[in-house]
Image (cartoon, rainbow over all chains, first blue to last red; front, side, top):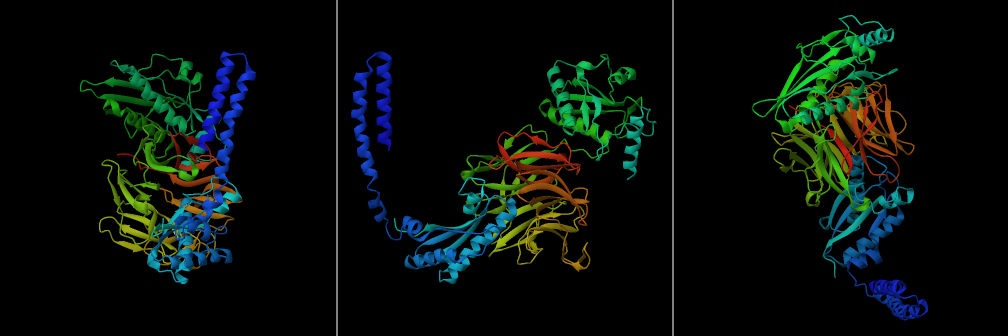
Amino acid sequence: MQTFLKVTAAAALLATGACASQPKPVEDTTPVVENATPVQEEVKIVETTPVVESSIAPGSLEDFRVNVGERVYFDLDQYRLDTEDQDILKRQAAWLASYPNVRILVAGNADERGTREYNLALGERRANAVKEYLVSLGVNASRVDTVSYGKERPVAAGSNDQSWALNRNGWTQIVSGATS
Amino acid sequence: MTHYIRHILVAALLVLGLTAPASAQLRVRVDEGNFQPTPIAIPDFQVTGANSDLAKQIVEVVRADLASTGLFDLQNPASFIQRDLSINAEPRFADWKIIRTEGLVVGTFEELPDGKVAVSFRLWDIYGGELMRINGEPGRRLTTTPENWRRIAHKIADSIYTRLTGEDPYFDTRIVYIAETGPKTERVKRLAIMDSDGANQQYLTSGRSTVLTPRFSPSAQEITYMSYEGGKPRVYLFNIETGRQELLGNFPGMTFSPRFTRDGQSVLLSQAQRGNTDIYLMNLRTRESERLTDHPSIDTSPSMSPDGKSVVFNSDRGGTPQLYIMNTDRSKRTCPGGGSDTACRITFGKGRYSTPVWSPRGDLIAFTKQEGGKFYIGVIGTDGKGERLLTEAYLDEGPDWSPNGRVIVYFREARPGASPQLFSVDLSGRNERRMVTQTDASDPAWSPLLQ
């Protein structure tokens, strides 16, 4: 992508430089087209993304994020885990069973439509609900820390229902023990 | 109540164009009702010495303080007829009546041989035709070092305000708040402090750790607040003079929502542990803490009554966040709705109520209310009666009282996505105004009157 930007910039410089010094635009357009060719080659590199996906190392942060799921989402004012949340947490628990050296921090978050202090308490409730469910699935409690960020750490910056739904979450973050 | 009647009497006399008798001097009404700001004149002070700029600056701060109350109409000095005022002579009342001045401040500024400055002033009741004594004295003289000039100005404004309204002073105070910078998803939050008029803004913490919800100690020397220092959200003490921060207590869980008790001996705070938040009272000398609530609901945002006997707090034990009052000694109390309980609910209106703050006068509780997609700052009697909403916005949150219980400071996000800014509003709901800060700002708290 950087190469692409450089090429475009170089092409632009050539074009403007030529325009300023010489009134012969027909000649000058040719190098622009020539220089543009490598851009297509860059695109080909981007097309190799499937290779990257298959290269996720089992037990890595990426493996947890992509193949397990790191967040559960709560309803307004709630800290109850629905079946979808429970499925994610079951996958987390199974993954944690496979990688017993992993320690996690569960962060409880709230949307901006509440007062700061109440939301801190609500975030703690949410983080604790996630922890308790993981522990009930056999994860050793000593591997799980919790923290509440209340409404201090939104993942979505918007002020609308969609952002608020994303910001009411329990976020399982791997602290240590993952493979790299 | 007798004050109130006197206010009405004075107002009525003024309306009729009558001269108030000597026993009922100029008195500015602060209560609700039809309201006109009282015209007062504060001409530049007479200067002895070379530093006339400083004298001018002092007068400007006095004028700005009084104007900020919304109670006074600070008259334009260009319109003043009498130009030969002397602090030792009676003003020509007729000259001031022509421009309808009701109160006149006459002052002098002197540079003293030891490098200090002295400001003297007197206050005249133009329609009463007499000097208004201040604390029994014919006037007041204040002396300080030149760099401390703003405090002299605030003290003069406090004297005039108190003499004219009967309210306790509040200009010679500071505001602590959270200065916010950076994008919403990566906000940097620092402890910051400023004078009550927004001057002398300073940061107290670096911003490395997120800090929240500061409150002053009754001495105004310490601040208690919550910090994510070391990744763990806990309550700290900050000493303003030394800049030293100190972790408060040794709680296993998250501690937050701290406030000093009125005697400064203890801090009320919340601890959240295993999904449950309760309120604790921690003695600062013995470092022992006492659990005040023990309920599976969220109990947070405690605030103690001025007499220390009761605590108002936020709890969702009834299903939604509402305000409750308990006795500090945890004994049962008689609830306003009948019956007795360890905690009596006082809010029954539609919506969610939180962040209660007991007025320094003891009779009212300020709160944040959330209802129908809006937030409000309001007040309610300690018996749950007389709820009044003073402000309304997309987000209005976190009220705190001026030390005289007359003005409420809070923060506002005016629209979805708008930055938080500090605002103040008079208890009557009038005179809502922004307090200008260098950065976005939230969580304001008002200091007691400085010593």
